[in-house]
Length: 92
Length: 527
Image 1 (cartoon, rainbow over the protein chains, first blue to last red):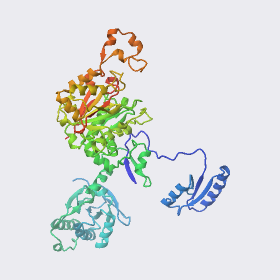
Image 2 (image 1 turned 135 degrees about the vertical axis):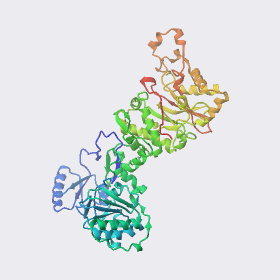
Image 3 (image 1 turned 90 degrees about the vertical axis):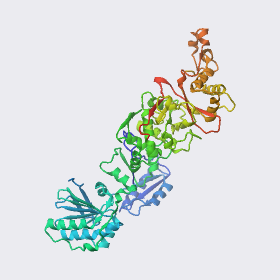
Image 4 (image 1 turned 30 degrees about the horizontal axis):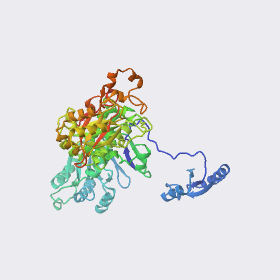
């Protein structure tokens, strides 16, 4: 972790920028299973619902090796390269 | 006697030891790769065994791996504490390992020993035995060297000391600390936060900011200006943070601070300078001995790229305006075209090549003063090309004709100008012993136009309004107006290489009290 000193007048809280949210879902949606038991059940159900509501999208499934650790860099890059959206089932 | 800093440290097994405890304490700082420390840790072990139930023997070690080695090598049972973050070593302000502190139960220091002097340690062992009424530990003192110097404490390692100073409780830094997650790229993060002028920034880590602050004697929390448009408090520390990001060396900081003070004056009016659609920006000129000390460029390519001091001082000032003042393009900064001088524009005057008074002397300072002057420009450096004139009157005339384009050829009395006269042009002017006053007068002479030529017409609506002109007598319409309201609106400096008959001009913005007036300030910490 790097620490830097705020160069501004500190009137605005430091915020992390998030990717702009598109208005509709198209293309490929990554479903990331964090490898907690029954996470796949949740994602299966979500996949059914999503395909109903957004026909034409492609769903690709991915899994983390373990829920206890952050996703490996290679997996994050793979998802970034292959998908337009990510839905991740976090914790229980 | 002073009270020693309290601490809580753990050994490798996670067992915590705190100081002060209910017993007197013997604290000895050690480092594994120090031969003297290896010589004395068996003595600490012996002290621990002999006095351990009455005396807390605490051994903060400066590296985690080294602590493990020391324990294994010397079969230690005395608590070897993990001070690998060096916070305690720093708090105790030690220069050398081993350093031993003997402290009373209430934490007061009783004795301090640095390095190893056999007689001192032996006396200490005997004193402790007497104090606690137990036998002294069985140590063969004669087998030990008479004395050994210690080694440098890791906490004073130059690579580490700045970090420790930045992190300590009495750190001079007060700005908000921003943690950038290890998976974030600091460079991308700073772009995302909007800190940048569009080019990469040096991450202003606490260590770098502290090193930058070493360039000034001023208090980091001194407020040097309230910076428009958002009236942000420009403290020395905040300016230093922006100077780090810009790529400055610490010795540039006094110039940056002085320039920030200068642009934030009412006369200079940075608020007005940053906002307009016209796209104004400061030009910073440095005079005096500090030019040489900082290695500033005043010769070949002085107004261009390639010199760190020129480039980063100007950039630091602009970043301060952006980040502290809050002037951001599209926000309060609304320049139609913008201009590249908004990244940075700072150079030094080649005083030694200047036959006249240099800018700062002309503006009331002593030649040996180091001075920052700030001028507001909207265009430039506009090149004034004359490779043909051989007399001062011809060349002065040429420069005047070129300057007539400032804003618009028909706009007279509208602005001021900062001329950068190149050495070859200086030589031509000096062939006829032209003074600065002669040059100014010549410029005014050749640019003087009858008002009737400056009236709005079919060619261009700029100039005197037709209705105003209609009220004027023929005599008034014949009156000739020079380009500049007063001769002193023509500011003259010398810079550039020995080769080339090309001078430059920065055209100004609104002048006088309604606009921006040039401001010069002495750099108080120049020596």
